[in-house]
Image (cartoon, rainbow, N blue to C red; front, side):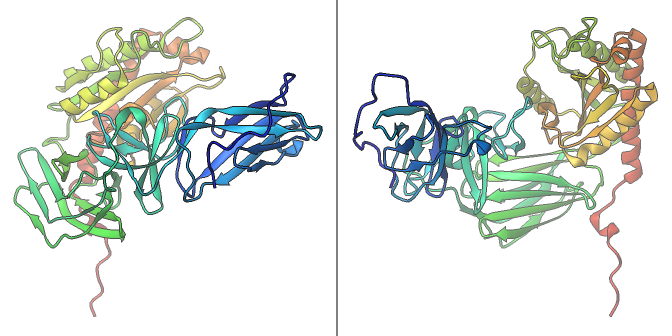
Length: 497
């Protein structure tokens, strides 16, 4: 068993270190539980015996497995029930055949959680979210989706700045420390029976309300062909005996549930229109409420509210071209021209910034969620390490909103810019909201000399703005053509017996 405090059998001699480095892999603070792997690595003189305080040996790797280096030692230890380690650095020991010895602590700490005393946490803030894993790039980790505040989570581990949380049997996720508050010990793991449902509509939205005994984590997906919402509630088991559908529904066609595994309750909402106009999932008390947005009364720009986001700004200048052209200036110039064009067509335009000021993306998202525009376009300028890379592109995250990005992309190609692509599952903050269709536009590459010359030309900026507006109009036209098409219309007729 893994125990702390065993005596060291000798002291390191006062000479060159035998043990140069000791680390946990990854080299970040970790919380583990039985069944997890504690991975240790050391750099020491070749030919030494390297071990932990509880006697676990770290074999020396063949140089072919260590980028040609000698003296690299590592081991993967499966944590067992009864192992104890309370936020301590681990001491490794090295000894050579001639008797010389050395010891060194790992740079980061390890804690083994007691499975009999669950560690719980609640989400906090307006932008709490779950990640699939620990991987990151400049856009952060790959997100599962946003969560409401005060959602109860079962923390089963930690690596660096993220807690691992148990969603269901064999399903886990990661939540950043800054959006979760640890609770004192003594709580029970999140679980709930479902109550009966209410499905209704008011003057603006359709609603699905499912009563629970606790605010449980969830994941939502917007699916196509047929158009439907699927919401998995983790830790919930059905005790639903009826679903009441009241008057006033305009976008919800059918609702039902499935229990794909004992601790995953699945809500399925069939929509009447092929094009979704957004939805929001959150809690009212302990009642999980899904608010489904309806299509605008008229699918034309006149009368709609369109949010226009000029990327970057203030101390965030974005990409910079060879001539010194800054992304923050170019996006604002295009966004202002887009605003003017949309207002001339009768739309109400909401700008996330109207000057060269710093506006955090989180603040933009919170503001947009409160304002609830019908559509959002985020304007950016692309850049690449290769001067040869050029062209225009649009980005979306949710496949249900892809038609908006496609329509804008096809219009932007009419400017003569090279095709770079229509990119999906894009993990950018302003593509994250599910409440309204949204698209990000990377107009052209400021790192490409030809594209940059176009971007700094005011006439071209106007042309880009006009093409984006035309893309919005085409999206609305396509949505009109799709019409109110229920899922049942796509199914083949049943054969009569």
